[in-house]
Length: 314
Image (cartoon, rainbow, N blue to C red; front, side, top):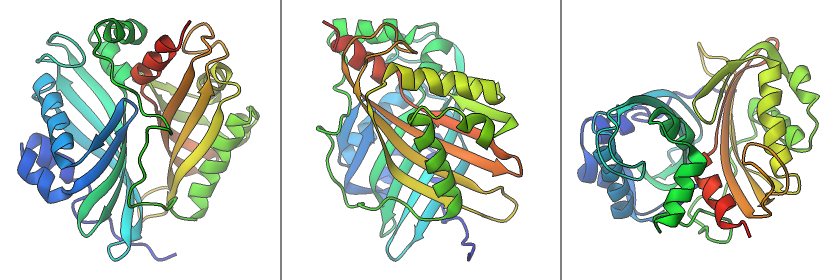
């Protein structure tokens, strides 16, 4: 395999927009005018909508610092690049916004964004933010936050396959073996084949899960994945993007964007079965070593899932 260098600017875009306060000028430079940005909380069409959302977040977290942990990517400048960006943010909750009045609390949380860029501009994007980590660190419970948003009429309409819109990227990533390995591992977990955990995870694996959870070991992986599948036993699991890479000085690594779509019919992280139709937009990054999966980062938006669960209850 020919190793390609990281696309110029991939780690610097977020810094220029957020910390450099480039905002509208930089958003216009890096984003196509008709960019489609999908989040679990809804759909944004066009660069102005994406810029407004960025400014709202900056109002709530004005000192937000974005630390680019990794970019896992495939493609080339001629045909377009699909990249999956994992960012760790630190910030102080100093302004009003979707997370309520300012608490002045310091927090850290991750975001993973899949972006398709062509002609030097991002034209398709999928972003998952760890809302559970933000809410817990400012003293809120994700279920109670979602209930308050619904009661106050402020809950956005979450993204579902029926509400999605097709964009310029119709591919699924690349066929590199590490990506295929992670995709197969996730598919087996979602088929309730939890024996895959001791078979494929390093015993000392380090794991990062929604809610800002940082944990270790095979038992912790089982405690995350089994309850998630148990909550949505009949939901359809789908894999949308698969990217694998091997680069100098880095372990083999992969990014997979996936979803669970179907009824909330089981006990798990979202309480008693509600029967609500739910779409869980998820993304997983992983690194592999000689004893299997050695590091995993998985995100979904707890707040967006709770809004769907509570809205769908009888």
